[in-house]
Length: 560
Image (tube, rainbow, N blue to C red):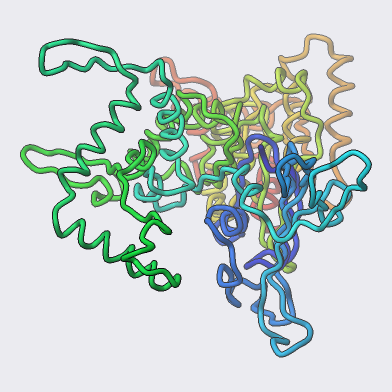
């Protein structure tokens, strides 16, 4: 089961967003854009035993406008199913709808209430057979009331907030990672084929099912616990209940069987705590610092992947918290594996948790005058394009998804030199949210620009008219024309062409004698590459800046 589409209206910073979801979705954007509000909307209606009107407050309403209603519609794939009576044909539930609204009439007029509906594939309220189908009898249907627990149980949602509290992931929490894992452990435990050796007092050894042995031991434990006070308490509760039901405990005690019983195996698993032992001291892991708890929760997440659990919807806020870059990359691989059989939706500020070949999994979240907006790529994510982009996996190129403005250049020379010229001009690229991404060659420029612009990111491209990437100059001229054609009238895409290449422009700006002098100055260290030399030359504040670098950088920071 996964969420195929989500529609959120008037919730916190969101006035209206609707977008489809795949098995993996990375919500990225600046702070306070509304990324977490998308997760909170899903968490609010799913990750609890019972959603009521008190699950929302007026502070959750967009603009705190008393005239607005919160509406959250969650479409499911495959559809959930529900039957009211045994033997009756189930109905399909395609969408779960939650509306935080007000009574329109009656004594409660104006008071808040929560509408919960199961919608059929046609968008109408789902109708379920109210009686088992019989030959010769016309079937009877009625509207599904609210969202039955049988439907909710088909949607196991797990939430990992920015505060990785271990107590929320222990087996006792209904919607938790360990609860999901221990349900499998318990199913295996109750398999009659799982046996354990039992030694009788006479030394005889026999193999008995583990579940039978557990039941026997729990009964023995209860027998030890059953003191005189225990029995009196149990009897007192039973007799009181009988009296309230109109029975005489002395003569009609058999009318109600009320007694304490030991845990079954799943109850036992749910009672487990996780502890940490240091020397002679042992404490609950839930009492440790956030760093340790985060490490344990992520370890549980990895165990979830190793056991190949299926069908869960996992919401994660900022998986990169407390992790070094290497561990971030490792965890991203884990999330991708989990996403093969589950759905993973997460917010992130880290380029280690997105990749250019998987651009279809990215949703850009931006705050506008009309509230939070979500933008996904309009490009077709086919296998051919993905294979073409596989080499663009490094995080520096993935940074393009986080840019407020983007400049795409051919290689390292421009990538290293332009930020130095920005410093000379007093332009702060980082503060303005601008990024310069090298495409790893001229042939990749067009693809990266198309990906960026499909997310409505203002994008510029700087390229050399003559490049070593092309041996066929006629083919290069055709490609140059395609790059020039990317420019838009509204300036959201800008294209700059260097008449030959960057080095020629630099020679022209500095004059040949000065260029040669600086090359000799910065070539002193053996093995220093040309891109590094170009960066060091750019640090020479007394030297002129080659055209059109100043124009490009001012556009990049929004100064023109």
